Image 1 (cartoon, rainbow, N blue to C red):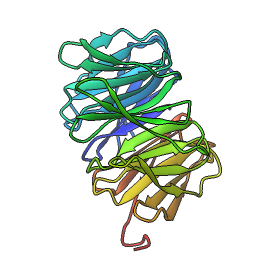
Image 2 (cartoon, rainbow, N blue to C red):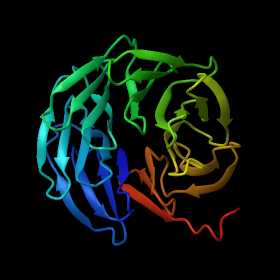
Image 3 (cartoon, helix red, strand yellow):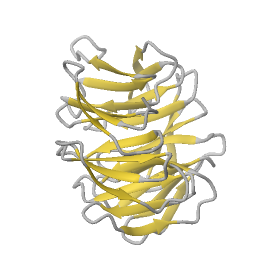
Length: 286
């Protein structure tokens, strides 16, 4: 598995894989409801709309695909990138798609008609991860140059760059639920928290023993989840950077992680499997 996304209610999981397919899973039973076939190369990234109606995927075949979750039908294939698509994101209303590519560009797509609304250019390195702000007005991107960039969705203009000299390649990005903070995972084995009003680096989360591949915020913004090539997922307190729980998987690396909206379920893509944990907050540290 290369990527995982969970439904808002925690009942479904969507995965992307090296076998060129997406799969929709029942979280409780582990049963695969349906297979989404259409990509001609491995799938790097998947995303699902909040209402679970739509899914998006990005692949080594250079295409972004939009899918109907209920049927597994491919609604449209979005062509335009000249190299593999490394990351995709869906806006909260499901109307727009962001894609980041090895061709050093980000593209904004209209999910309704498949039109490329604009291309975000000017980067000198591959775009590894993209994210929409909660209000849909901004985008975040991470690059192999170790920098985060903040973009204006309406104009495609880069508003600023988040950079700390000691930080290595940034592999994953996420907005806090209030849109005021940015979170990044890095090949330097750390997570980094940033203030988007001042572009100031606020905090480093230390504990992983290898590169951090995926990061996510809880719905209330108080918790952070990370997945790493050290074979663990970690839960952190956003305010302090304290790691209060470590989840150890059965394989060598977690390539993608997701946290349910009620913060009771953790999903991790590890090797050919999705690992699922139920968090009992009565037993976890306060």
